[in-house]
Amino acid sequence: MDDLVQAVETFISRNLGAVSKSAEFLQFGVDDVKAMLKLESEQDSIDEDKYRSVVSWTKHDKDRRRKHFSDLFRLIQLENLSSEFLNDVVHKEELVGSSLECTNFIITATLSRLLGAQVYKKMKGQSDEILIIGGESCERSVAKFNTKTIQWSNMLDTNIARMHPSAVNYNQQILLMGGAEGWDGPYYNSVEMLDLNDENPKWDSNLPSMGEKRNVFASALLDGLVYCAGGYNNDTGYLSSCESYNPEERKWSSIRNMNIKRTDHALVSARSLLYALGGWDNENTGNTAEFYDPRNGKWEYIPPMKTHRSGLAAVVLNNEIYAIGGDGLSSVEKYNLDTETWLDVPSMNEERYGGSACVVDGLIWVFGGEYAETVEFYDPATNKWQVSTNMDRERPGLCVLSV
Image (cartoon, rainbow, N blue to C red):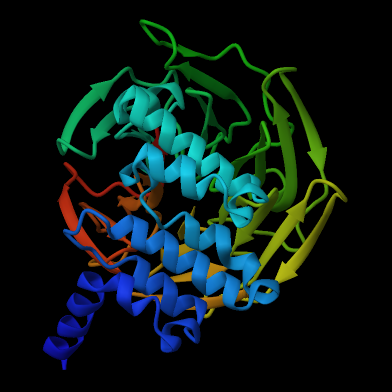
């Protein structure tokens, strides 16, 4: 059966232009079209064929299918299209011109081609490198990992050791927040920053503290603000409280509490909303998930995850939220923002409790976790996890950021 599937996929990839003109193709569901677009081919014209197939499929039922166009469009390698094809065909397509998202994809591909991929990445604050900070052992150590060369390098230690802190990358300024000296405290609300834009970056502790001491909490960036949610401290116990930080004004502000207390949970941003997933509330490991809308200041529940997860990692990739691992778990699931449903994803190679993850070049990279010393990545194009290398030791409770 595997051989038959492979033969069919090979035939489609080699004859995509003809297949996409068939009546059967026009009846495909959106997931079938996505799967077809992810097939690899050595043909030079494959991305032109992919583009024409997406336009043809969308226009067959434009009113209903238009909402899927940008998600399908992003699966085309625009940098492989000729300048003539982009100018004469793509730019003139109404479906493209009416979508800000598609226009941005074209701008990105054009600049990447003109400047070179690596130069453009640096301009956008992107690279092939990942920063790894701290861990449950209350470490000050910081390391950098290159996803292309699979090489490690040491960075300057943090100013204080932090157990289970949280961190974000704000324009190449790494904000490291909270944590604790140990399970018995003291617990921190302090913040330190490493500015990677400096020629000789050093950790700076001269930043405003959070309003609440937080350990085993979660943070995320959304529209230029840093958000911190939940956690634990030995003064007030388990937290549902949340706050935001404006880096330009250097000011923390309280926002509405989550619907429930969460620690050991995950927080991500997508489509101008914050999403809090899973965690522990001192009684149960949760599978609930909720989103915060800064426009109305409210938290609202979304459908629960299939699996109860505490100590999970989470990322957003291709308009889907991935919930990764947790206590005793190697399983993964993803939430489709369009269909508002949770779908199973192949499991990782190892169980990861307290691991951390980020996205680099369309791949999900996962580090650390209790009893886990490996680094592995997930490729949505192949729908497979692959072990890349080992860490020097298991490292739960670490922070991982694309830099």
